[in-house]
Length: 258
Image (tube, rainbow, N blue to C red; front, top):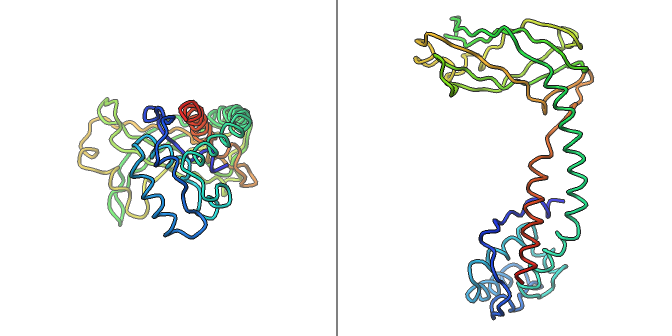
């Protein structure tokens, strides 16, 4: 369904396309290769306004010259725009309904994973052979019904009561050597932020000199893997759903204005 979800055209640039113009109604050369097509398009564009050009760009954004010729052989920009808008109007509602069901299931799974929490957080800078190492210590509690082999955490560091974090990172948490993180388990974890030499963002002079340093960890539901290393929730369909709804609105506006 890529052709439905990757065309994003703000409705504010859509307006009446109905007024006939030589440009938008001029047949394009689609059967003689890219150069001939581009030449015919350049000629048509001279008599198209910005809104018509934007609508055409939306319509062909996922179409190769071969696909364009198969669907709309030597057709005008107007017919191509109308055809692609019709396709979205036909296919998008059912796809949106399916994605809304997927979103509800994903949200439920993500809510359960979010019952894995990090408490008793502390932050320290520890010096070793490679220099200062930023380390977060926490107690992980699995309050969910799942067992985990892998989790990812979104980490933030706040200084001296500030509301904006001084540093952030994504941390990988592996439980395979501990036999997994079982439901009800509590485990003390030390996370070194960065690789061998530690993440520079987490050991600035400001961080070193701060009077108070407070770390925060929030589990990333998309990353959670079960004991078989399978994703439990997987990627959220939210962006795909939002993009598809936007495309449907655009297609509806185009059809009104053609």
